[in-house]
Image (cartoon, rainbow, N blue to C red):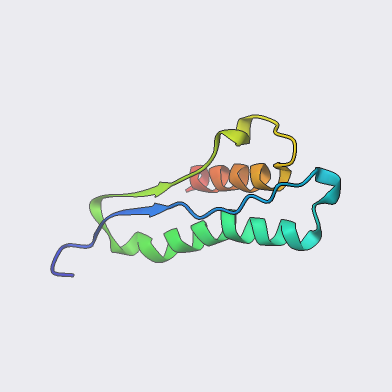
Length: 89
């Protein structure tokens, strides 16, 4: 409080299991979406009121959101969802 809030919050959580799309389990999909999309949104939600007026929230995404990479379907989908979440704010 004495320092005027947070200057920056960098959110870079990620998990990237390597598996062909036809072998990604429901549990893996769940874990990847929670870690890469839901957790960053909740961290930002908790921090937003503590960020100073000229502070920033920084989210680390990935270039794979615009490309297709064999074995990274759940990761790419979760980072694309994160991108859309951030844009909707």
